[in-house]
Image (cartoon, rainbow, N blue to C red; front, top):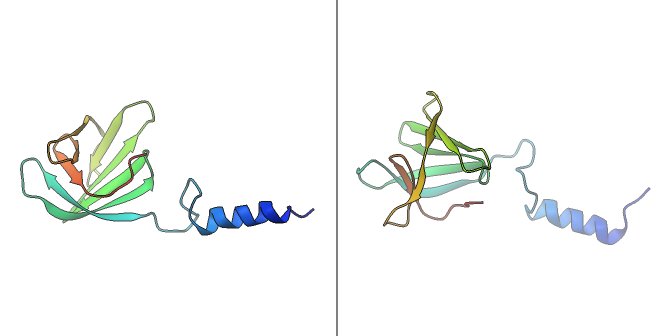
Length: 112
């Protein structure tokens, strides 16, 4: 059985334009060049990679990798460089940066 031409075209558009809700199997997750800081330190270039928008992301700042996960009910946990998971609070600061217990990122990245 063949899909109607319009349905097939819509499916191609969704796949071709990246409108699918998840990263395609085998594809690299999107990475964003942003600025980060640790504590009250200076803002430095970093990379935020988003495995699943609003669910799993990581920040790479120099030799430090911080991985985050959100449970969908308001709890966020982070793990620094493969360390143990710990609960963190999310907040916006005066620099329009999103912060998680001492790690802040600002720039263009998806939130949900």
